[in-house]
Length: 336
Image (tube, rainbow, N blue to C red; front, side, top):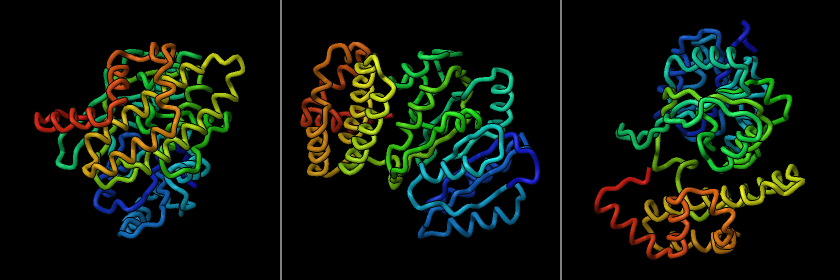
């Protein structure tokens, strides 16, 4: 527990990230807002991550080290929220880093607007330092009530990731919003619950978060197993939707979200999986899902952009998609 009244709690799950951890922790320590606490939730690792966490916790009085439950990032973040003393919450992955003014700017914005959460800009970086993708051109400045949920389901401005947001801790607690204790795709259900229970969210166009895209990252790599875990989580999400959707008004919205989400990862599979057999297994996983059934729903497709609809069509032909990916690689097109 912090010895002062923390205005912001920065929650950082830690697992096998010794090469990147110091940059992440330094970016949290060097915040211009000093009334913050940094909660490190350590999961059992095979590298030097624990020693690094211990050295920082010994050096800085506002860093607190917790032993995680060993059930993945979602469970670690849940422990962080339960242990937090700050009025507001930010999540940071331990291989990423944040701008020095993030906490100060988010604290001011959320205090002035009384939003349940704030969305801010982010960048994806390659390991050699190149910007792969930037998201900061939000179309909205403010969303309220059901519009938040609709935008979140379509991954439109309200993104699926949890770390380009700042949350009011009382909002999370009052609505009993927690991560599912799974080791993949935990952000999906969490962000949908956030959006459903929220009555007000705002957007900042500034880029504050920098996400590292690692080839060895368990959370950002693609495989048949990853897709299987994702389908399990989407089924949990469907259970949540069915629970809240008494009048069945969200059926097409869920199907559109389901299609868009899986299509993105199928395209990533075409670009990133080298072994043909592994690539084929991805589509075997999808064939056992409702993906192609939902792809026949015109009402769901109408909710998506023409680009997404075109991508869904191409995903009906895995070999052709693979050909497009190979050709694009030759031309050095990017998937981000």
